[in-house]
Image (cartoon, rainbow, N blue to C red):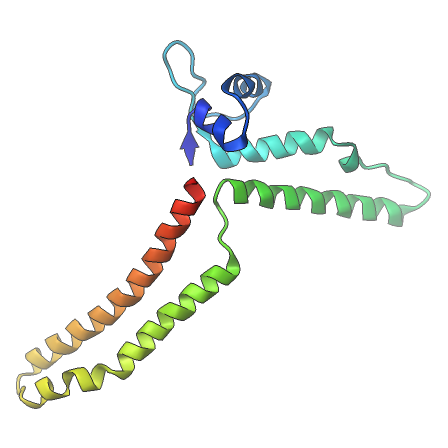
Length: 171
């Protein structure tokens, strides 16, 4: 999501002047602003940059390599990488780039229930119409119409999920 300086400040709970200071320190932005030009900030890139900066400054992320104990050094490196991974995940969550796995699973399961239920009822819905048809083209058109309706119902369920997720990520 690309936002201006004020919107990015609101997203992360800071002020626009604070964002300007970060831009001077190297916060990535698509355009630098200036006389009448608005700054464009790609939110995921900016949040990742902020997480990287915080990781560099944090005493918890400093690796104290003990050459007499290589296992300890390796463990400290693993821990540091894990912390960085967690911070990146948090940044992406803030930017609205991740969906909850369970919510996606439930939505796909619901869409499959729609498909299977409507497929199971297909014969009953079209049997009387098919009984009176002799034209292959008419039969094909009726079956295509019914299967398109089934696909549309499943697609509508998935689209509703996507729209709700977009709405939540903008709040």
